[in-house]
Length: 107
Image (cartoon, rainbow, N blue to C red):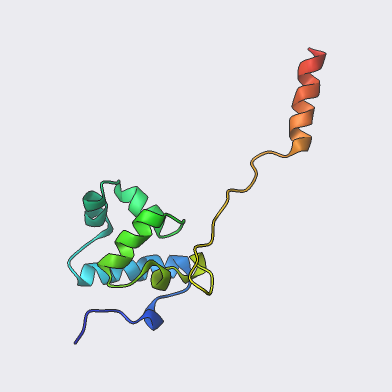
């Protein structure tokens, strides 16, 4: 019996996938904590990589499972295999900024 997971078994839902990855690592005698120590990052960083994009740590986790990052995190890649660049949402609106400027001018 092979320990290599089928890519069909990888859950699409990020929360379910996190549980699945932790279970698969346990079956191999590993953990996110151990992977983090080997990669030189905190356990929290390893855990966060399961929910938010992180090129380096995605590769570390996928390699430990015998998969590629694209197989483990398909939603982070285009159909032809290119990485989808994630951008942070804008923190402030220009409307809010202009109100601050007006308040400072009046003072």
